[in-house]
Image (cartoon, rainbow, N blue to C red; front, side, top):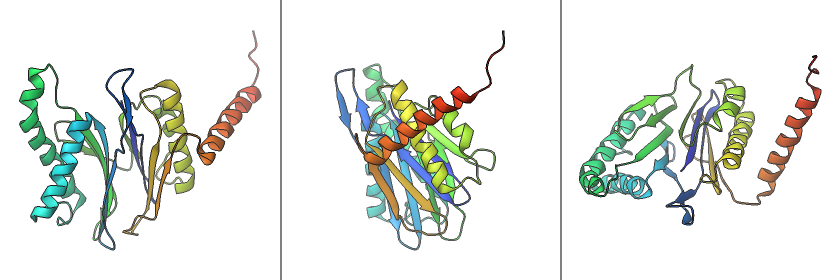
Length: 240
């Protein structure tokens, strides 16, 4: 299982993913699920992947191959909508290639993505792509998109993430949502890859990995737990 989240704020974008993959309770591994395509001054594109590792890696490899082969590709198109379509096309191409063989083993093609970024000449945009290659886009009423094991972290994000939230506060909220997810589901685990993109910067300057025992993450977790307990203690008493 995976947990990935993308947040769209007035200040910029926040994208984060865990790194745990597994093929059964005794076969865990770590793989980075964040892929960045950057051309300084022109575009920043960030992909967060969820689903079968073989499927998502094949899609990303195909995207890289098409960049090397020449336009149209992720680094040549002029809108994030076009990028989302190219990603959807690559997903369908891999599904057509591998799908029949997966079905012979009782499996199905399973890959989904969160895509966020900005291309010079347009606003930042954030998309959620499904296994079929179709997608939705975050808007004014939807400040964040998730994929994978989303249900444990969503209530935290609902409490604090709005378009006008500060990048600092929303980033803390995203990290707390990962902590609550990891507590509730062992198939989501560290390291956590975090990237914050400032609007109109067209460069990645804030990117960090949080591994097990990270001092900041541990402090954040401890203070969140202590603060939550204090709030419950201060709630008005129940009268019978």
